[in-house]
Amino acid sequence: MVRACDESRRRNRKSADTHGGTFADIDNDGDQDLLISTGTGNLSMLLYNENQRLVDRTTERGLTAKNVGARLPVWLDYDHDKRLDFVMTQFGGDARLYHQNANGTFTDLTSTAELACTKFHDAELFDANNDGQLDAVVSILDDAPVILRNAGTPHHWIGIELSGTKSNRNGIGARVTVTDVAGKKRIFDAGTAGSYLSSNDPRIVVGLGNVKAVRNIEVRWPSGRVQTITGPAIDRYLRTTEP
Image: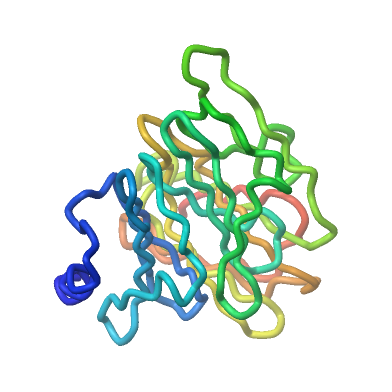
């Protein structure tokens, strides 16, 4: 982390002016990467975990637009193509949707996703109608909140709802590894952390693309217990209770 921050300072970024960061396995290589939102007039920082060192890949991944009081970003695979995308709200401005392309770059889809607004505050993710498509509720400055419905895609998915017994009720802190029939593994850490003063749906929604089956799901609970579910049905939510 120190090396990445030092590198950003050499690029004349105000690396101390941050509003928060979120970890996720952005490139599906089995370790956690980091996206940091920054204050007015600065680029966000997209840091990839490469051999246990966080490396700044912000501009080469296509993130060039400067923030205007950006809030904490939230990760989701909104189109279930097996690549994580993210939403970032800007205080009193737009809620920006960035789609991850096949080559690992990100494209700003704010205008096509009809998210342009001048008074967005924060966004929280949840599945409003339990169809596996993550929706969002967005708070608006001096007005009622707005629900943004995800119209969905034809791609497959599986949802995982954790229920702890020895661990906490929602399994917060559990490491979930999903292996599809092609042998591709993806990792997710259970949590509800969201944007500013908000929390997300605790269920984990995993996009499967065109893959039609999951080989197994491994859950490493905070208690230390390890659970494996073999051959779960897809395109639905799976409630998993800690053994």
